[in-house]
Length: 448
Image (cartoon, rainbow, N blue to C red; front, side):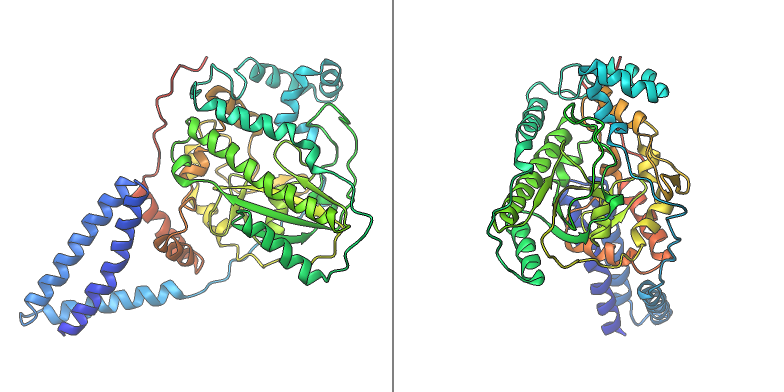
């Protein structure tokens, strides 16, 4: 029976060693502590059984533990398909960019446009005026404004704004004839070589496109028509260590950094397509005509979670997205989503429980614009951003899918993808190792 004890000692110790190693590398000290205690208890158990193998009951104990572990392993690998209800319950309505909080915030610089908007949406005036009294993002006065860090993000967003002209351009008159498969592979290669962690292609539909322009004064209120056939979705990963500071200033710096990285890739890709004769437009932070989240999900790169943002299949919500739309002949990379991420979101609710603004719903998806999904209270969310002086990201920080792409986390992602019991066990383990609630940093001033 010693050989079985040794095999079980190794088999049960390896996951705990991976957990401790990953937790220490991520400076997740609570998880490292629990993992270390678990490893020591596990070692003591099996060493004791090996040393006293000849004592009455030792063999029976080993047999019972081995049976329990075998049953656990069998249950863990059982695949149970997630039943995903139909999300569309009536005709989909396109989103009006004028209703976006960033668009509404810009109205303060354009009184005539503001009067036009609030004449149609009088209920929004009071909320926007209240939020408008708080410090601007990137400006002194927010709770987490940092005099040397925050200006980095402000400079990044200024550069993005100045680069808006790179999004569009005339296609070369001479069109390079290339097969759809070859061109698709070339675009995936460009994305990967320039730093994207994932790239996908999906057919562009009307529902992916904003209904009306609203972010900038020029052409404000103008209807947007779908001009292209395909969308190339570019995903870049944010640094987990920076997001762990949420909602402090490093989050805004990292977020702006990755918006620039995704924009850089998108501008290059769009320029490349125009250079070989195809119409193309890049859609980057502050200059979108399309909705990135449903496009990323439809391209098979992940799912949409409770916090109403994109959940990448590897990096969870800890990503930023840019899109290139084009009339070039491409092939879709659509993969059928398993639904396990949304199923986990259904039971998890850590983002909702930890949201400082209580903007994330804790209940079931509700109807909005003709389909069922979790909708965030954008007024409450953005108002908190302004009070904090950063783009918060507490929901991203606490999400169990926000983990580096290491061995133990790969195993965990596979584990939760199998069945509902695994998801509940994984959630319990995450609460144990990382805590259910997080403490916010103290800040540098009181919120007015």
